[in-house]
Length: 247
Length: 117
Image (cartoon, rainbow over all chains, first blue to last red; front, side):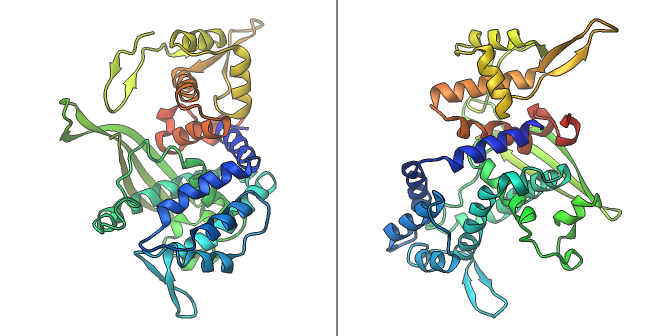
């Protein structure tokens, strides 16, 4: 098995065997980041996330939404559901993705580890695309003083620590069939995993080190790691460039 | 072993292009980290370090196993993180995954297709 797949399997095993104390510590850190002004009910949320994260109980999306409401009080974006109801996108994302993440850990060996290489390549490309989109939205979000800490500018080192979780998310979306099947109606069909699975979409990624015009106090130029991504899909090339600074 | 470039952004160490197993361990020790062949084997099994590339020596002369300079720097990076950051195996797994996702071919963790063997 290739190195990345072996590393992910080792990581999943370590997370599944994490102690409740370690899980609680991680959950606390996460809740600190998420909490908004006048947050209340943090303990109940921490208890619930710890119990589900330590695989002691099944996650309940509705209960999570209920517990997240008084904690995540500053949410910059809203999503509109099929029913027309609008909700905080942060809460909706957490209530949806957290249970999915736990399912992904449980079924990793059976359903995710064996996904075809093309789907792993898709997950990598989607992750780069998500970082690219995040970078575009970041200046607007960071202008809000209450959100600046949560949406700070990311360096190449910042994305190191969460990258196993970040890679697992798209893999679990594909493996657990959480992506709608109608890829023809998808606004970004070249980023639909099924197009990659059947070989209709492929990416060429060129990674280089680039020096910006910005000078650091020591006189060095600020360096970036540049990923130039070109996705070939139905005789078109869809391109984007992600620059992640070192400082 | 001295680093020849150390800036606020990154540091670089002199390495040769390919390394045998013993050289991997010795180079890591030269950087000041505790390393053994058994540890390297264990980390290969766990995916922290890649498998060696086998190069044939010609008909009937067997083959040798080599690691790229990128895999050596990954090995040293992992030892450094373990020593300074007291990171557990699970946390160290982020390093090869990060290299694959963000550094691509430059990170020395090869594309899945070409490394499947």
